[in-house]
Length: 101
Image (cartoon, rainbow, N blue to C red; front, side):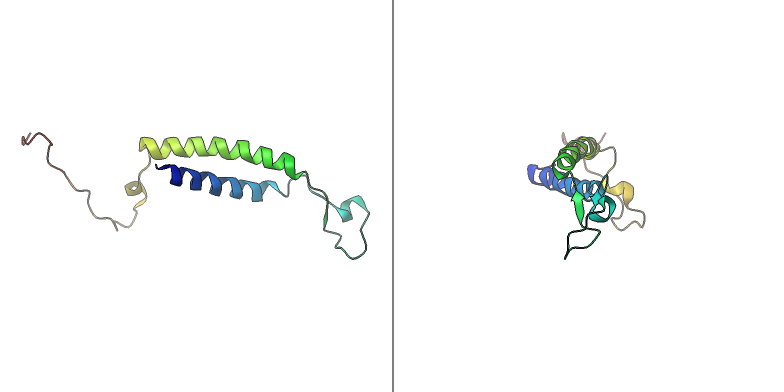
């Protein structure tokens, strides 16, 4: 895995996790009972974004390490998820030393 693909994988994991964490413990103006005129009752009153960003960073880092290990070690490869045989059979390569056996 190149450094670019590792960074892209982490960024995707971070943003997906962040979008899932944002609604947790969200208190709206309607929940608190103090709706500011001109805003919706569903507007956030207490959002705790800094705490959620730190939690997201830790969770995404753990998921990234697990996925990096799976990809780098070859536990799961692209051929493992080729259910329709689009890739065809794997090529057999000749030995490097030139012998047949």
